[in-house]
Image 1 (cartoon, rainbow, N blue to C red):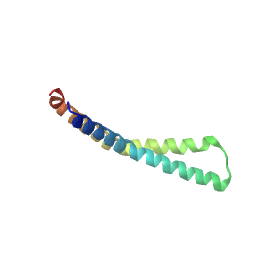
Image 2 (cartoon, rainbow, N blue to C red):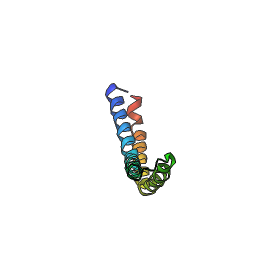
Image 3 (cartoon, rainbow, N blue to C red):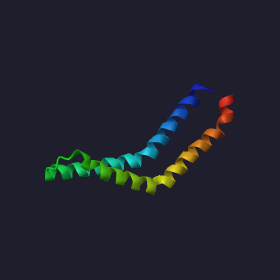
Image 4 (cartoon, helix red, strand yellow):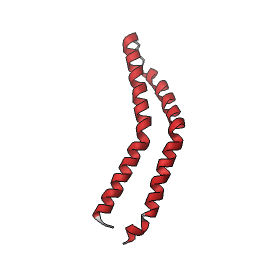
Length: 89
């Protein structure tokens, strides 16, 4: 296992994690921003108000992006298993 192989493997893992978690995090961020703007304009200072919309948005995002996320993770795992002979060398 060479140094270049380990760096490439780490880069692929990091990119996979960012691609899989990115859509959910971005949608949660947008939902939180919208709720914060709503709270600022109406002067409602309830701290727990922002949790319900964010939870709903994240659950919807998981349902929508779940198959795509599963495909990306399975593709990454398949590539790792295919590279096992290279690791032994």
